[in-house]
Amino acid sequence: MENKVRFHGQGGEFFGIWIVNILLSVVTLGIYSAWAKVRTKKYFYGNTELAGDRFDYHATPKQILIGRAIAAVCVLVWFSASHFMPLFALVLMLAFFGVYPLLARNNARFDARMSSYRNVRFNFNGSVKGAYWAMLGCGVVSMIPLVILFVITAMVFEKSILVGGLFTLLSVAAYLYVFANVTATITRYFANGYQYGNRQFSAEIGTGFFVKTTVLAALLGLGLFVALAGVFVLVAGAGAVSFIASGQFENLQGGSLWPFLAIFIVYAGMLLVMVAVSAFVKARTRNYTFAQLKAAGEPEYGFSSSLRTPAFVWLIVSNILMQLLTLGLARPWAMVRTQRYLADNTAVIGDLSLLNVSGEAFDDGAAIADEVAQAFDIGVGIG
Image (cartoon, rainbow, N blue to C red; front, side, top):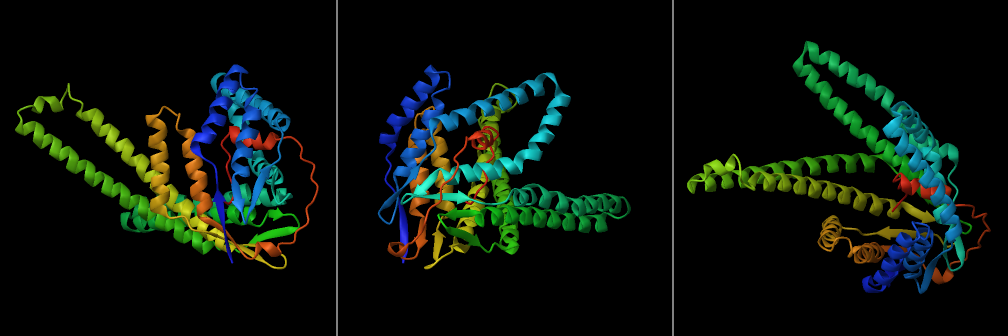
């Protein structure tokens, strides 16, 4: 039995909440932003329905405000150090990498504990040790043989270009594997860490899938860049021929908008390629992870995700264009469109009328890790 997730929010309705949040945050010099975040979360959670019941968000503005204040201090210290004390900024950067796994883990735990369905809270119980291995240790250990291989490749190149070329291909393949393995390890950590009430989530995440996805993404990016270069050459050639034929060849050297147009085309094309590759990876990864995900207990429940790369790319590109053309005023519609698309392509497999789950009380604490993670753009999870 497939239970589709439904999102009932409307762009026009959310715009009223969003614009008030913006205005009050400006008037209060950012203090109201904590209340704004809670209102936004409650709107999106409260409008997300599964099998006739809706989700809820339980964080309070006070929790968010404390975390946001600490995050603001961290950002201010980092900004000041990077401008006036570069050496100290380097120390701070190393310290940040040292606490990154802890921040990501605590961020996931806070977000989960603040979320509920049918009055039962979610939780994230991934260990700190597991977080450090997934997000730091695995990558560091994997990089050691990779660096050795890079050094050997450089040494071999000095003696034989052919053998050096073969070692270069081997190095690229090794890098792709290491990247895929680290991504799989992080996904495995988060997928097996979530919990709903007394039902533990679990997923058997294979590295092979991520190797295939990484290779396909690299080939897709390369193919799109080659196609982009071909289009640029054709357009540039056509423009040059047109100028020469019209006797305005000197316009190619100065006083013409063509160079600016060419730069715009290149950057727009590169952005489109990056969006396409990113959407491809996210869609494949989300679909695979949800297909592997199970909620333990009797009966057992599964999950499904059916994102499609072309539709996902169009959603992202159209959202960007919509916000650019309206100077950001269309952001509420972009957020609602994204949430609706994700909801429409998400389902829980199983008879939810038989769902029997018991909740657990948590010490909510402050949203310190959550806000610091957002301040430094730490977004890790299962989508």
